[in-house]
Length: 406
Image 1 (cartoon, rainbow, N blue to C red):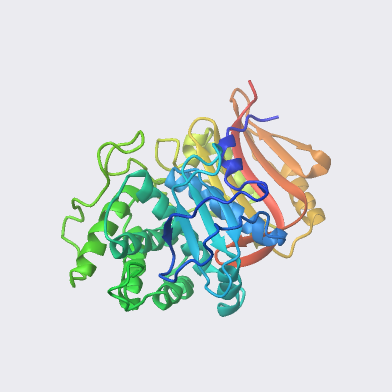
Image 2: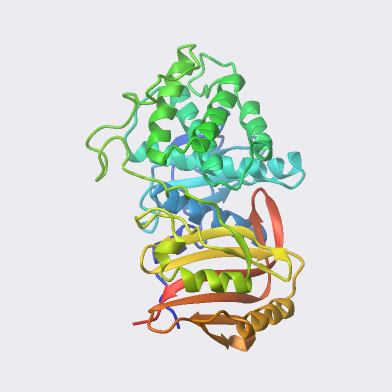
């Protein structure tokens, strides 16, 4: 077996149902609509829709890593006023950075408006994570500035994921535009439609230019202030004085959260045999990861099986311990994947020793005198994931480089 070092803390992002817990929802919401119900908000988890729960959990786990925060998330009944909220209130110690509330009406309306695709829901979840980041830094600013900075960071997250092209996220842009308002004298004013659109688009552009989360946080705050002052452009240096206090909860200011570094090269699609050759030439996870810290990204090969290129669902990289890409292969059966792995095992390059396990669903490839192994593993059943703004059904395959268990 191999040594897996994925942080166990990620598994607690979404909680099991907590009965009738009712935290008083104080914080920031997606739109300026008032949150009705003076008796608190009924927390709902799970939603009753397994695929919906799984998709939110997968995206939320990625955001936990990117934002460096571990909140709890629940759905709630938002009635006829679709909304989402973030609050600094802690439901329990397993979510020390606050609570996220996603309205079920909001989810339904976004899916209906966008023909079942939900780029906008990804952006909305990122928007609420941005509020938690603001809370953690004790940012104090007028509501529109807080909201526009969160919009900017939501756009940055879409661009940062590196799987969304500009045309892919138009639904998200439209969703934020539609939630602008002109109630300038209302304490719930979140920014005009034009301002909200400008903020999320500018955040997306900042990610495409290589900004990390720290830079996006600072640039987003400055951009929001300038929008409220009637100026759309940021300063040339992209810096500014917008941030939290220096006595944040165990952190300095600006936020010390650095997002995973962008890969210096894109993942190459290779056949199973080519991936084995790549592994023999580049032993060790450092060759499969960008950057040098524990938040770097997997940049090794994305294996093509039976002529199908897997859709990248998620990835992990822990320098000197683990590099792993999670892919979903559409239109394949487990039997096809097993045959492909068997063919790969029978045609490995010199310097590699293959072994098939788990009924042929697990290919372990070693090289003599090296602690590293290449593992290609397929789940025994079809999975359904929400990837790149759409549902993807197929066989999940993990492409992994790791050390022998010590």
